[in-house]
Image 1 (cartoon, rainbow, N blue to C red):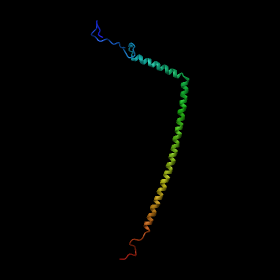
Image 2 (tube, one colour):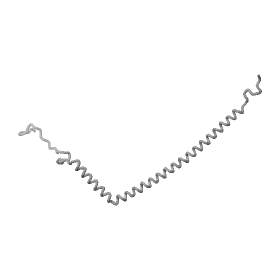
Image 3 (cartoon, rainbow, N blue to C red):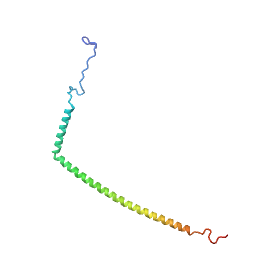
Image 4 (cartoon, rainbow, N blue to C red):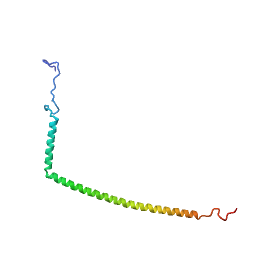
Length: 126
């Protein structure tokens, strides 16, 4: 359908909102006042938390849990070190016995080589 009258040659104007929420633009708040408001909110929360009995109970439970976990960790580490020291001692003893067996085997082989048939002794013909 064609329009007649004023603005007949212009496209119809679209109705749009100024921003995505459909509300009028808000005046810009300075960073300083925004930071001050944020600091006041944080201080209020800290005050509330520090006055809370539940906070101190949770803090006590956390401290006890950390202490017990530390003790368990130290005991576990001590046990592991004891097992490692015992293994190291057994390994050293095993290697010492192995070295003794090898040394006696070498001595035995040297004796056997020395007691063999004479090579060019007193009974040789000239």
